[in-house]
Image (cartoon, rainbow, N blue to C red; front, side, top):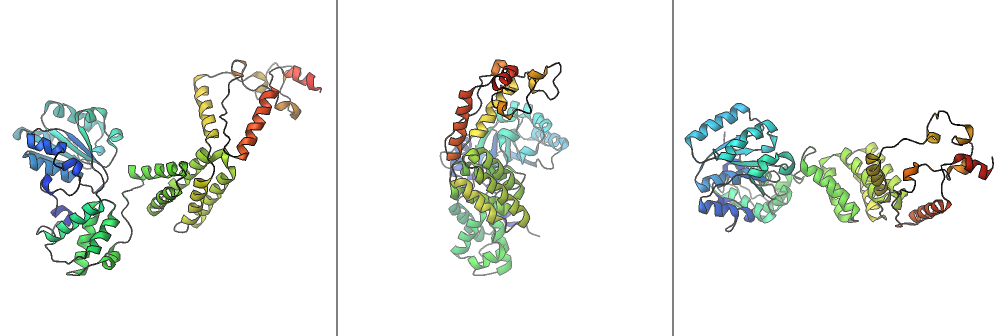
Length: 422
């Protein structure tokens, strides 16, 4: 049983690496490190299939240093101790840890003294954000290098190489240029995904010729580098809200489509509701209500039809007047209340004790309600409401706010009742 194509055609040295010119190009840091035989510890981070582990292994071979490869998914403390024992026979030595973000803090801390004293040089590979998933101590000892998704041209170049070389398909299948281009478009910058399609097509269609039509029989859905539990998913959710906030309807529809393809209706619902109230808010309350109705409709019909009400909601929110007045106002109040706890005035308590009737809250006097002072005396002039005039509705709210300010408020309920008559 032969190994997968993606494994067989892995670059042996930095010269064989496809794309990533900023990392492995002539004047790159890695190249200079190899030329000067100056070893460093690195963390390669980026989406799946972009070559992080491949570059790590190619770097080790290019610089001529023995390497030990481990995968953090199945790595135990005993495995680490075994790797450390091996380093006694190789000096210098590179320890390559794939999926390094899967190491718990104890194992990360275990590596620190050996990285510090040069027992081995650490090269980690991760699909997660290293600033979140790795300890500060590990980050301070390793240079962080981002590995970006491959361009379509780079993918095509890698596919043609894999189809031709003896370790790959050895020219046994004829692929048309349109097949290479279509695979590249589907792959989302992921070389592993692209090579898997290439190998499947070779097995299914033999000598060929193999074009776009044949590739479509194997794979039609683009490879979005996104999993519901991974960072790229949350990046897409974040990009959706920011696109709506920036009124970029085309971008918002694109990110909505990505999330719909991933099938994560729950995340879409939560984010659209938050966005509606946070970014549109009081500028267009009707759009907020329509968003709620669209979400309910999407829940009822499910995918694939759910994309229709969701699409309507995104277009509506994007092109609606925007206002953060309500959001900014409550944030201001939250910050203030968190720092300044105080007792509620007696006349506002649910069951006030020892208050005479004239000083109690007047449940039967709606004409007095908007004249009563509700903030404590020390903070009676504190304002939290952040005005906005993005729409006629907000301007009406502001006018009423001004009227109430001019009217004034009082904590002397007895005097209010007498002034207005009982």
